[in-house]
Image 1 (tube, rainbow, N blue to C red):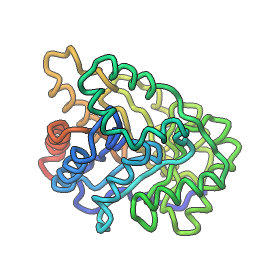
Image 2 (tube, rainbow, N blue to C red):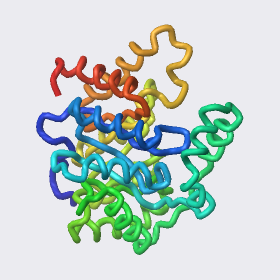
Image 3 (cartoon, helix red, strand yellow):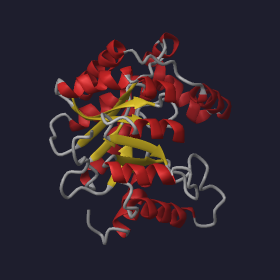
Image 4 (spheres, rainbow, N blue to C red):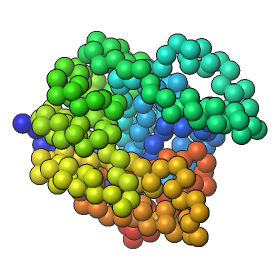
Length: 289
């Protein structure tokens, strides 16, 4: 049995969340660029921030922690279950040099893109999940996170239940407000809805797809909050459209206005793209948060 309604937005916040997957990454925003994006997000009323222990080899959490450490009016979500292998961790000290190379060279950009597309190693043992959470809390400079999610687990991990039990133990210890799962497929989403300990789902709700229609209906009935990601359709989905900004605005508004979605996530590595997403969110909320 679930424990009641899930509250993911502070009063007066814009119904838009900032995804931090490319904050501090080699192919994304540099630390200074990320700080500027995060400052603008806070200035514009964004109060929901989504990250993971693996994003930017931990730098996404560090940057969000730096920006949010003294604030109690934000909601911070992070994830566990995946980890950065040693070869990639060894590159952290030279990320600045690599980022410059990627921006100058198409070949380097393609190499980084190929490496990014490879699956990260995983460990779903409760002890490793606790260790991951404690590392995230240090980087985020917080005593607790609002939501801790299993990061794209296969359906059998959710069905087995030990990993979810590990997150539930963290909730009972006061390190987490809500237990959640970021899923990549319908079967795993349904398995999550069968587990009453899971209060939040993050779903890839691509425009024009109804793959998760039944999942959304079930989540509403069960009181599970849904965070929508990839609402613009993924990288390159807007290219070639004669009016990409209007298309993006329409897709953001459709998600925000969907009563089955609690939070709509967008990514941004530049202030211009974040400003456009904020404008789109305001356009479908009457100009108010």
